[in-house]
Image (cartoon, rainbow, N blue to C red; front, side):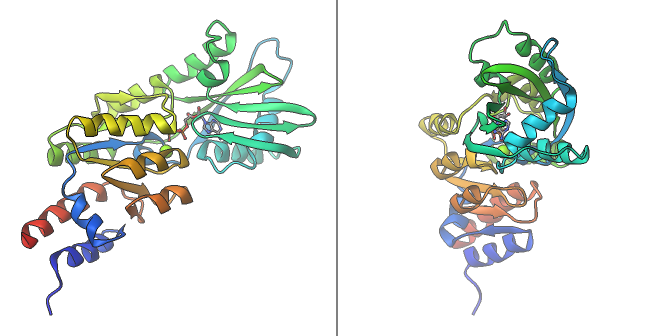
Length: 295
Ligand code: ADP
Ligand code: MG
């Protein structure tokens, strides 16, 4: 027997390194007419690395002490930024004190008790919470203007310093954005938890004009709903725990597999197993072809 078009399309997607979880999903992919892309791990490689260690003047800590505390608190976290911080500490052979009472807040950061002190590591905007006149806010803004993700380190509520973190843009990011624009007739939106400065800079590099930054997981869902209310069928592409609610809310959700969180891979309708972002427009086109054969 000849294979039904949607099943051949699933096999074909598999050859491109994309796991499409069902024939229904294979069909839905061809209906999408709007796309929302996550930044870290989706448009970027998702292998961030620490570039700057900036203790605040008068904080009394060295670069290494700042890094040691941050890495101790980040140690239990799965977040790519946490791995970057821990790797930087390992690269310097720093001994990490044990962290207790670890907690993480998606889109914000982590907290843990280290040596009897409460350490917080995360988004400067969220941790400073309006204290825009604090020297830490200026230190973070300087890094963000260079396209870095700035991470604030606080001890017992007092800012100690900031770390700068960078992540390479995927080689195929701009071409993928262009292909998705061709397929849907609309430029994809960028939906990210990262800071507006770094987001705007990256968006400009890949040809995205609709930039939504500083988003919490539920804000990403709201962005999807807003596009839906405009009558669109939305494809969300993401990788993080913070993307899972938006992947679930979307008409179709695709997770990036290599660095993707387990929750994102389970929630998504399809998974880019081979880590090539350019296969996203490819599977949309495969779906459209299969749908024409079915009809
Ligand atoms: P994105 O949407 O770009 O994938 P996330 O929502 O995962 O980003 O993270 C958004 C922001 O939250 C980060 O830029 C960072 O400021 C902060 N953040 C989240 N988790 C952590 C962590 N483990 N360590 C430091 N900062 C974090
Ligand atoms: Mg991400």
